[in-house]
Image 1 (cartoon, helix red, strand yellow):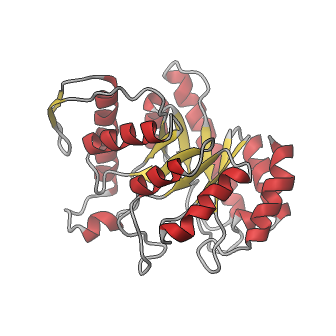
Image 2: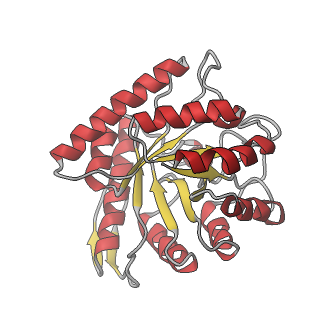
Amino acid sequence: MRFGITILTDLPWADARPRWQAAEELGFDHAWTYDHLVWGGLPESPWTTATPVLGAAAQVTSRIGLGTLVVSPNFRHPYLLLRDAQALEDLSDGRFLLGVGTGGNLDATVLDLPELTVRERVDRFQEFTETLVALRDGDHVTREGRWFSTSDARTLPPLRRTPLLVAANGPRSLRFAARVGDGWVTTGPTVETDEEWWAGLAAATATFDEALATAGRGPTPRYLLTDAAPHIDRSGRFALTSRGYFEEVAGRAAELGFTDLVTHWPRPDEPYAGDVAVLEEVAREVLPGLR
């Protein structure tokens, strides 16, 4: 199993830079950030978008993968995203990991965009992703869609080394991720208890396996983003609450076939309240034995 850490963009670069460097020095395989204009978890905090931060992180690291969890169509066009991905692939020397998903709706609300039903938001995301794939795989791309269109879009240089990781939780999205993605990302279901969350993850992996088989595709990487689904009974704790709890989460994720586990850099308060000392202990003493 590989391990990643998510670093939020609420801090100035002078404060965030040591965290990105430490993520590499501690031996994490990949480091991530969210891509929002405003994040609902910290709606009153300073915030920046993901792509410039990842570009800066690429300049102060040399090995670790760098990714988005996740880019959404709430404020991005797939052609602009392709251009950003090309730049990040170059800046990182092929270490960029492109996670895409439907995303939370706050950004669209802030921009006063038309309100969409859940089904329409999934429809829009699938069109967004299919357009992105067409741009990645072609040149002089012309597409006319309900939400996203291009006219003779030039796409050089080719995007060669950046995997497309598709976020999915529900059955329809899981089938889509199995069909078009180079990997699957999930936060698991929103449920009331921790055990229901693990049961939902098990059901999702079964659906994803079936969809891969239907699509005639072999195994693909599977990224589990922990900590993202609060449970009413508070049993779903931050993975870095303790060394023992992290080991439990990693073990159960491995049993379900996840290839990658991603947690969050501890913060002094919610969300993701925890102790950096636990992060360091897990990185140095636990991760080597779990790989």
